[in-house]
Length: 93
Image (cartoon, rainbow, N blue to C red; front, side, top):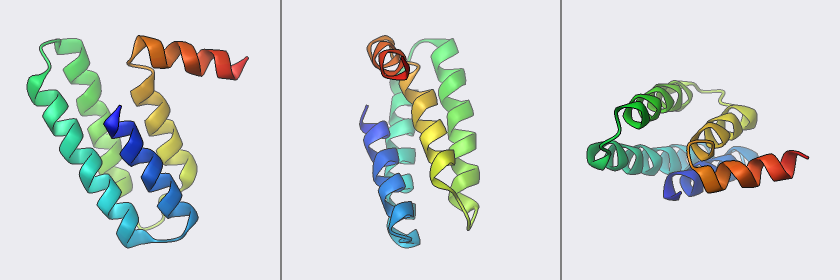
C-alpha cells in the first residue's frame, strides 16, 4: 500500500503542476514496486505488477500526465489487494 501512497502523492503534485515533485513520487513508487516484485512468489501477481510498472513508466516519461491516468494506476494496484478491492467496491455503490 505504500506504492499507492506514492501514487496519491503524485496525484497531488499533478494538481499543483509540480512536475519535479511528481517525478520524485513516481521514482519512489518504482522503487517500492521493484522491491515488491523482488519478494513476491506468486507468478500472477508478479505479472500484474510488471504490467502496472509499464503503465507507470509511460506516465513517468510523458510530459503531460493527467490526474486520471494516475488514479487508474492506483485503482489497478488497489484492486490486487482483497481488502482494498472491497473498500473500492463499497465506495462505488
